[in-house]
Length: 360
Image 1 (cartoon, rainbow, N blue to C red):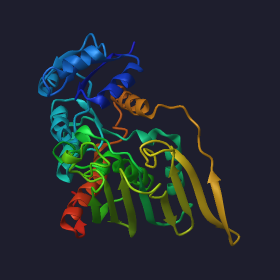
Image 2: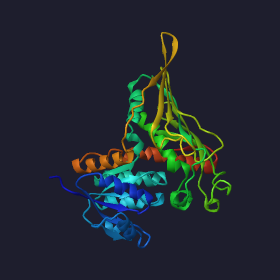
Image 3: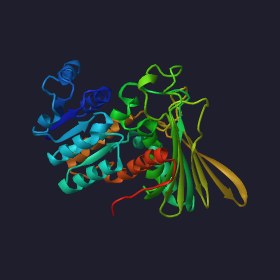
Image 4: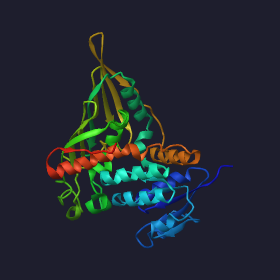
């Protein structure tokens, strides 16, 4: 019989409920503790989800004193860094919600702590579990496109601004970039093997979020709802990134991979004002190439599936913990994703290009 894995959850907000549902789908996994900094919230969470054997804590450090195999960190973004570092130092494997952190320095320390302790830091980019994302990666890495020299990614919602903790810089650190932009970056960068970013030149704004006509919490909205950036990478590669929570437009366009021998166009799935970004599944994949001198477009069939992508990422984490495997989506890799978001924030504030400094 398999050992029952003991899991703790840090942060009792909405996303923590999705973790509960995912863990409940798995055999021999038990949620034994929940912590939340708001007094009484962890106990309410336990009662709501009927986690009858779980202990409640107001201080996550008390939770980390328990004998746990892993923790899901579901706190607001600004708490990701400290809770992750403390969990790793306490000997716990970590399933961390995106974005990885607020700043690049935080992300670097988190990854270095995972390496030093030998415990897992896994970052939750569930769109990777769509089999069509694997198709994109396979095409890009197959060499069929030749040398990829330009990538365009991002996406935009005509209307899709959240509220609550998402719109406060003090709590979230960033807005649309941290919420949905990190997904688009991961899709493109993972397909290319996560190249090393060198510089960022960016612009951001929040004309919609701060306008009461478009957002009921406009008075406290102080993050960006739109951002665009040009990022240079090693290997003479550039990426044009654009993301929006709200705009007077139906789309900011598909993701494009331009190569010397071919090109790939990818559209997101979904319809309506909250769609148009790569936080879910893929809508279409088109391969552009020449055949005997003729311009040719080939539709790559979309793989229909009924996978719950969120549950898949939690399952992968649990299996990695149980089998002693490396993190499925390691923090060491996602540092480069965070480096770009950090660079966009700095460049937007300074209104000039900035350099990205990554440790060797």
